[in-house]
Length: 188
Image (cartoon, rainbow, N blue to C red):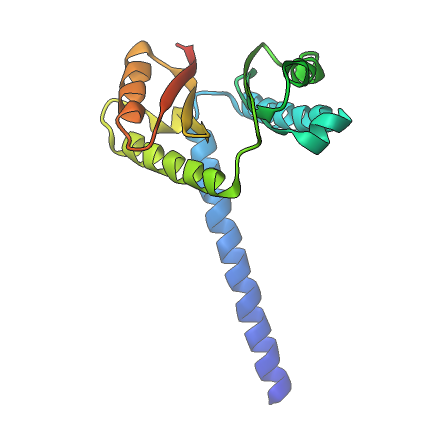
């Protein structure tokens, strides 16, 4: 009887895990389907981000002393983070500029100290606030706008119309705590 109970409990737990995987997979598929980028472009963007991270980490002093991220939308890359010197900023740019599939690079790396964990947490909160406002806004396809926040600066990326871009910028500017909004849009 104990053995049967363990088998039933194990089966239920495994099925719950499968259900969660189906929900997550479905949510990902819906997001991918509503994206204006092709599935191929979405995959290319993921590859560009991975290759950029590897290329940056191949530069030892960037790996050890910088806080950098590369975000790609439709082959347009946004470099953000902090480095100690202009030379390190240039090295980061050189590390990623020859990665296949990159059409343009926006180098928004700041020279200064790396941001703290509390600043990163605040940035995540700001990103959530901006995304929530975009989600509830009319005449904006929020699935097509990527929001990235670094040190209270909000970067808006995606394939949008002029009207969507202007509306998104106005929304982000009016979120409490946002110090600056930078457009990295590609226009339809």
